Image (cartoon, rainbow, N blue to C red; front, side, top):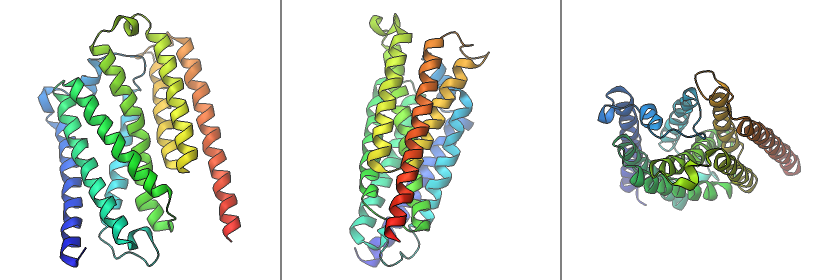
Length: 268
């Protein structure tokens, strides 16, 4: 990639980020289709949905992704992930794609196109799986870790939960009797399947940021079930499952931290 191509790629990354932020702002401030994102979510009531305050994590995600956008403009340090031309090109292209999918998903969701929203969300999840699989193979210095590894780890973690929630909303929308008549059981199954996916991903990608994002999401589900203006502790089986899941995710994260410390010592 020559200097001109590199500059174009940097601008495209920046532009796609701004468009993504603008779309999300429009969904909240206008809002799109006269409904807020939370109001659309309430249209598909289900026992997996987390408390509203949990969605504040988007501010954290966009802040860290903004750090990535700034970082990709800087001259890469020798031997860093970004010093490799192929890595730079791949990450920029996949980031642009993820930003486009993020914006498209919001339009589909806000305009109640639940089927389409699931397809787009699965596409976004696939892109983030690829990005994090790529980053897991690389070593980073502190700045690169904060501006590249952490942003995509948090993003991936939250989108993992968002995908499960989106599919759950899809099942509610279709009014499938098997799901509708056994919501408690299916929610417990979904929580446990999610736990397996989360734990496996943390250990395979060695990504604590991913784990923390999913931990926050499960905590949000617990809050929703315990809150008086939520499910008001109506489903003790789900609450127990969420608490057990939270403990296991914490243990897995701590295990990964210990392994990382051991690896650092071995390097030294």
